[in-house]
Length: 272
Ligand code: A2P
Image (cartoon, rainbow, N blue to C red; front, side):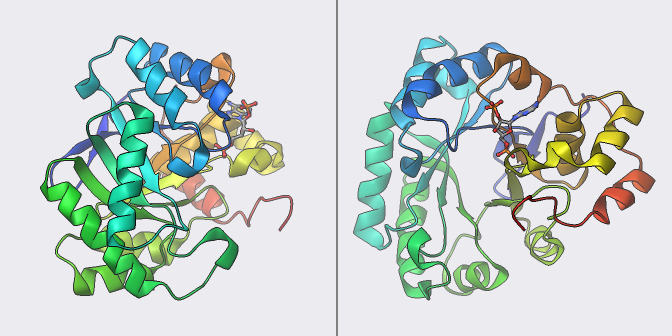
């Protein structure tokens, strides 16, 4: 595998693939993260809102792997904004995880999930200032955002000291968010791709299935590899060991021609 990691603009490195834990309940998170670590993943992504931090942290500890060999991300809940609120939520995540620092901490969304689109720029700036303080204090090695638009990110760049190191967004074949990804690249913000399989919908797309056959890989592997070819960091998730292994075996390249074909595929989501 030619890739091993991406590098943030502050020179901190992050393994090129992460194990996502969204929608993995706390009781399933322990075996899932244990399997991921056993099979070579060194990058785990969680969030306070996932309610599985406790078992994610326990699985990391019980793995016996040195803390510094693991890259661990958590997130400030979308509904919690403000300076003190951010510090408190961060400390809650640290306590849940049983850790004394995080590798990456993200604002989970620019607005609460039950008020999508609400104007929260002022509140996000307050949260960002708290994250900058935690970053400068050495409590977090890199800070970023998630589900942020160009406008949301620009507001932080215009008013704050630290440009976000990452923006974690839904990204998969058929949803490449080109303008946002180009904006992030221009500002040296790493795009992390969550739901690289469109939460499973991608796996039944006939065009993607056919192309995967051509490369002698699975549809999941082709879809995850597509994220890397687009310079985004995929965060696949599964609770099955065989799939956890499969999703990290990405030692092939997709030709520029085939990338173009994949780029032309419209949104694969069943519900769209
Ligand atoms: P499961 O946990 O039962 O393996 P996404 O990462 O886009 O959100 O997709 C996650 C969904 O895709 C989960 O339902 C997961 O189910 C399923 N999944 C993950 N990896 C694979 C794979 N290699 N093959 C088939 N389904 C997969």
